[in-house]
Image 1 (tube, helix red, strand yellow):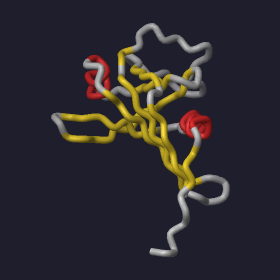
Image 2: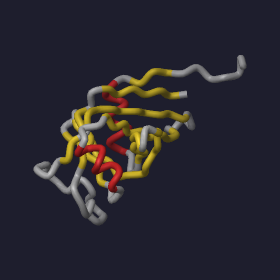
Image 3: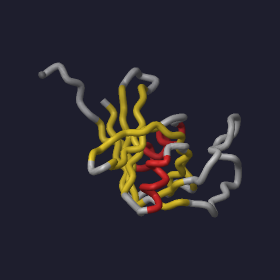
Image 4: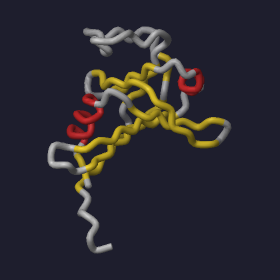
Amino acid sequence: MDDLAPTTVLDREDCLNRLSAAPLARILVSVKCLPTALPARVRVLNRDRILIASSDSTILLAAQRHDVLTVQVDGVDESNHPWSVVASGIAEVSPDIVPAEDPWSGGAGPGGPLVSFPVSVVVGQRH
């Protein structure tokens, strides 16, 4: 196991930048007390809130209950190093959020209620 590359912890700004650039994420949510990951489009608003667009009713129900949601994105950087970022917070349905610009520009809107949460915890690693 000596051949494993060292891990670099990413700071908050780097994590938010990677989250902002991700076209798709996994939303980690509990379904009948079992963890599951559901795909969704996400955007970072004002560097402190995650906006989620999903037609999956599980995510909307979790937000109505104010469950903790976690967003995870992964990628490979320009130096071919894999990385992963995770952000968590207490979810809410966000009917009043109107971003200054369309957060899903270039594509169709979310087509349903938006869910959001404050970025209470964000961590990331580069390998």
